[in-house]
Image (cartoon, rainbow over all chains, first blue to last red):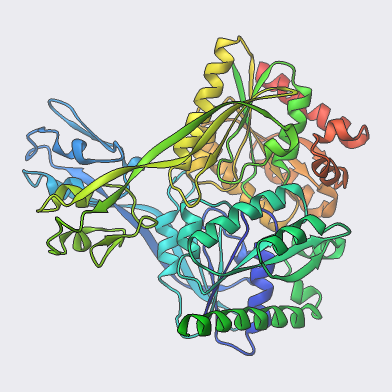
Length: 288
Length: 286
């Protein structure tokens, strides 16, 4: 089963929920954590995994052999990203604009375009305290996180429980990380920013056809607006984590909630049971 | 024209609250919300929309089943695994058009995507240029570039001296697009290990694109030891820490009331943010 953890707004507690959830589950399940927030991966800070394997992520970018090139301009004509410019006597390639689709090389009438691999990030795998751990890391200065997210997603172990930590927002890297999950847990906070971005996240997840539920973090005196929204949209609120200085302090030191306050383990186990219940209910509905 | 962009790496450190306050403090400016996939600045500035435009960007392949001979070449060549059973999954399609160029029966056409909307609004504090990326859309970087360009044109036309941008979290495409060519990046961080890790990465991006950066430590008293480590790290890298702001509920209360912090409360926090703006203003004027 694959459960992704997303939020819309940043800083609502995805990492806190993901790390405590895997730690709570590890004694009962075969658990894997995929950190798909490849721009700012943080789970490693909390889980301190021993990294065993590191794989570079490349995108293939064109390399033009100017001895073969007739400067016909076909490559720049077919490139949707303006990554090639053809002049009478030379061709300029802009690797940072290239998506690596391969159209230019395939369509070059002179077969003058080969591909070279451009390193954009890394996928690291290892273990942390009985948890299989995988994270992606986009190189600083690189613009395209999605190919790195895709590589991390390919590491999902389909036998066990896979928990995916997603980046904030609602655009392509978020979609790539959530796509194909059995359930998406949306972490929000009871503030106007939290609610506004939760609404966008719900639209995104529903567009993907993935069922979702909500965790309210920094829950306090007034959750009424977010609860009302969840009722209207038929979204189950699966866990409340209170606004608490001790929790914030644990987080600041890179300690997980269940390590610092072990009583939370049962809440995370109950959260997972509810998710499993919702997923099973849905699949039996579909079968029927 | 002077442009400051507020970034953080990690989300939720207080970018939008600080930008909302700058909106109230700076006299002569255009405001821009560059966080186009989860925009929140409008919740503080309560804009009156004056202009609304569609944002068309990128394409999606479409296979005409009547012309398709089911040869499978498109599926074989697509590197984004967007074609299956002679159908295109629009969420996986990156719009490269490769399939449309190679289809032997000319069955594939590319259709333009409506990828979002952008707006020019009036607020109590001046013009705001903002946007909304369509759900699950790509090209957020292009939309960011577009709203910044619009803000620059507005400022030029009206002789306005400052552009203040609320940036997105992360270090990827929309961050790079918010940053390139700006006069100054103000990074709002928090004294958590995650915040510090992400700060280093976003400072790396600023350095890569040669935009000078300054740092503000928000909620510094959540972990003063970490706040001191941030100060030392910045000192070691020749980066100014221009403010240390304590944790204060007035950030959240102001947000709930739809107001910038400096207008909601007249306490020590507001004075700290005022001093921060003065420092930023001075360094932009250098």
